[in-house]
Amino acid sequence: MKAAILSIGDEITLGQTQDTNARWLADQLAARGVACVEFRVVPDDLALQASALVQLSAHADVVLVTGGLGPTDDDLTREALRLAMGDAAPLVLDQPSLDSLDRWFRDQGRVMAAINRRQAMRPRNATALANDYGTAPGLRAKVRNATVICMPGPPREMQSMFERFVHPLLPTLPMATGFVHAFGQGESFLAERLGERMRRDRNPLVGTTASGSVVSARVRGVDSAATPAAMQQELAEIEALWKPFAFGRGTTTLAGALGEALRAGKQTLALAESCTGGLAGSLVTAETGSSEWFLGGVMCYANQVKREQCGVAENILATHGAVSAQVACELARGVRERLHTDWSASITGVAGPTGGSELKPVGTVYITVSGPNFESVRRFRYPGERASIRDRAAKTALALVRLAIVDPANAGIPFIWEWPEVG
Image (cartoon, rainbow, N blue to C red; front, side):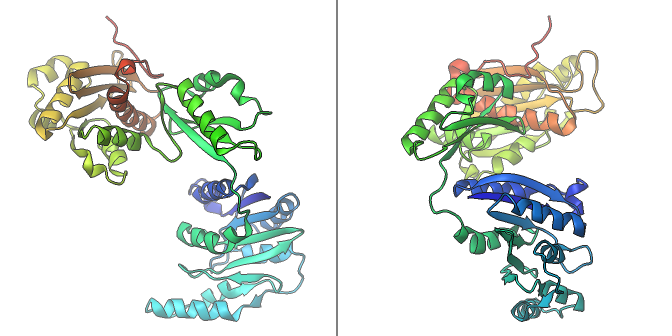
């Protein structure tokens, strides 16, 4: 089975909103053995939407549409579907949908506005799909030989509708897929390590992708020859080739992998963050159960906080500056001592766009990891703008702590952004 995904809305084509729905849908399709042959995004334009539906239906068995089912004049999906079906008749009122809409507003203690009546309209040969979490019913229809499912844009509504109405249409045998994730090197470096594994005539197929500085190897079985055992062997061999940068499989995050290492040793972590302003802590606390191993941190942006909360001596700050190896070490030691943890990491740097100098240009970051019989301070020079620098620094700190715990022999291996001290 082949599928296509069509996302609708000016807010997406103008870059005001990220198209997270398409990514979620593609993941769900892949997990159920369905190849997604095309993504497409169109604005709130009736002709473009209808044309996209016709074109996608020519080479996909299922077309999944999100957006454009609201009550306003720029919500055109219903009319676009009618045109794509070649139906000259006007939209018709779907009474069960109208009743559901009226009931939804009454349950909210509100009176339904007349404009919402538009949401209960459908092409005469389309079927309305109930929305359990909102006001916009979905639609199901045939365009050419494809089944078209139109769903609302809000993720909770779309995901619920997918599970209820799309999932039953999909194959029962999922495609064999798997992922290995790595951090600390670029995609080209890691892809080169895979060598012949990336040939496009292999089974399973292996490809790489990079997102948020994490590089992932995507492993996909082409047919039944890619047995579960063969897939596991492939994943294990990729992990070995990517050692020590590989940190996990599937949905594992850097913070999650660090948590597994700390939990296994019944150890704890504290963080001292200057230029990242709590970002590393946010990544950590996004993990369920992180309270078992993360005790807390200090967001020591100002020098006063570095002194008072982490015990950095005034003479060290005055002599070396806040962005220095010496201060990074003092921060890591101080937060570890004060929060009584086994491990700590500190981050101090120049995230920009201002504040850089010839000796410490924008992107300069010092990260120290402190632990049982272990201390390491490293200097990095991250490219890009402020958000990217902060994100990479936060993830680097987590990756370095994990390496120190699970692979101390490789704890000092250079990362791609390493920038050793001069002199």
